Length: 300
Image (cartoon, rainbow, N blue to C red):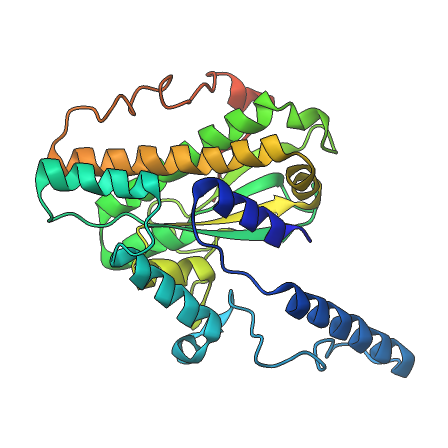
């Protein structure tokens, strides 16, 4: 629960679009799932829990290649990206960045776009951390293209996300409000260089014909795509604490801006973009000994 509310909150704070199941559809699915479970229990049967669910409501995070173009969710993602590419629905900070690049470097630049897929997971220790940043889609897309620079971009984006989320969550003293107290707050799930296996919650399928939302996004043309896995306890906090949710959205914004600035610096030979490569100015306040406190970055 709460993933839709969190997605709406992030979209509101970032002035972005949000795609989610409608409340009536979510409620209908929940009821049908419970009913099918009860029927199975009465019959003494196991499995086939989803036999009453609407087959049109496919899990958009597990679509086969042949399903993509007929799937309503994928079609909505495609339309959203087309609107962005046509500058029809650019938010202020995106359009400002584009205008700056146009003015300084002409129109031969790639439009930077961010796709965020919000998921819920169980609390630690069942899940290794309260927040998992999945960047498998960006990493494997770069590997498949043989683009080492794109892979480095994904790693940099992951580092920026880790630092920004860690800063926001520790500043809000979240660790004192989550249980167990010694559980990891944040980690990044992504393949290492030369690795072809998908870490759990990395936001990518490998060796199969299935595609996650994040993989669909990068294939469509989103420059950045991340899957966020939030524990039940963290989701409850984000919904109850509006200032924390605002800071959470701000962490996404800050990491995205840092990544865009780095890409622009490399592409256009810019020497420092508005100080975004200074750790303090970018909000990267993590101390050198934080890893010793049990907060691991990467899960390979």
